[in-house]
Image 1 (cartoon, helix red, strand yellow):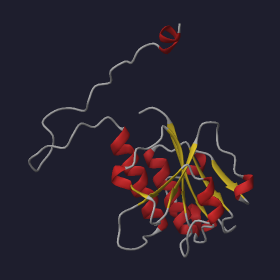
Image 2: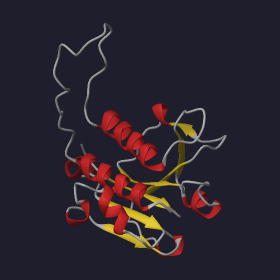
Image 3: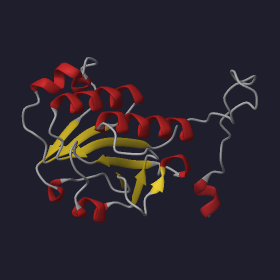
Length: 176
């Protein structure tokens, strides 16, 4: 899978949710995890992060949106239940993305939504736990970008293997 991704939350207040998000991000191969204006007591977060992701992937804790610095070319993707948000099952994930979730009891701030290149919603009847929402987004990214072929028509597993990678044209030669 090409590209990279990060995931984080704005104003997360429950350290166990942050820990679960960190653990799941580690499992799905995130490049880093972040929080913006998070609750400061992270000791509990490490209790939920049984994979000890802090020793494996960077964790950035920014005090405000103005402090957040994403890599050049990285698109911020908001996960929020808004009327104009794209449903997750039909969203094409950017190759370089940082997904931002709102707090447990609230929404992403208007300032955060304005910074987002895309806003995506998980098609549920109501809001779900922030760490579960993050897991669903990461799973969808993995599923849509991981080179899996179409699902079989009949119930059960696939008959064939994953799609094979096909090398594209050399960009340097094509530009000449």
